[in-house]
Amino acid sequence: MSWTTNTVLLKDPATVSCKEIFQAVCDELGHYYSKIGFKYAASRPKLAIARGKLKLDIRFYSSHSNMPGEYVNLEILAEFYAPELKQTRTKGFLFGHTALFYLKNDNDNPQIRKGISIFGEEREAIVENSQGSELIYSNNCNIAGLTGDRFSKIVAFIDSKIIYWLDQLQTEDGITAFLEQAGFSRAKSLVDTNSNFVAYVEANFPTIEVENALQNF
Image 1 (cartoon, helix red, strand yellow):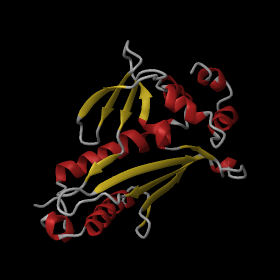
Image 2 (cartoon, helix red, strand yellow; image 1 turned 30 degrees about the vertical axis):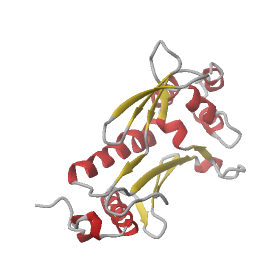
Image 3 (tube, one colour; image 1 turned 90 degrees about the vertical axis):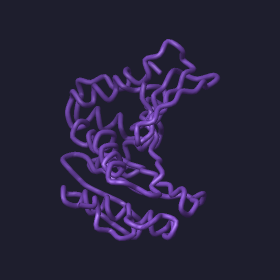
């Protein structure tokens, strides 16, 4: 049995427009996550859910560099909000993709940057004048000719790198783990003037010295 009944995704990608492929994959993800409580908006592809003290938006974008039959980009961007802080200038915004996908990398060379793609490919690069070694999970992938196995890897990425934190960031242990994994980029995004992360932690987990934890970077 095929992994999907969406005829667009079962055709030769060379015979389908990049726009159709992108929309079909977004609709497939929307159908999958709607079954577990997310609301899906197809017109500007977005998944949204509110649970406990947090709200999560996951948006999907593509690229002007798509090449019919060869490359269709899927970019996955996520934003966490604290509705209790919605009266702030940034409407309770906590953080976006930088805090999610840029982690501390335990490498003795501070200039080493390791990247891991959604489909599992790894690569390393030297970054001059780096603030510290980082592990970066790419939030872009090629969905031209998407297979069931690769669709499952996209779902696994969304589940483990994004949705996982929806519950974890509502516990003291989860906040602590999130801070312990922080590299320079994550820490910087959490103290940005647009972020209400520090205020959220101080209001809900007063025993966590969040500002001290982030000042180490």
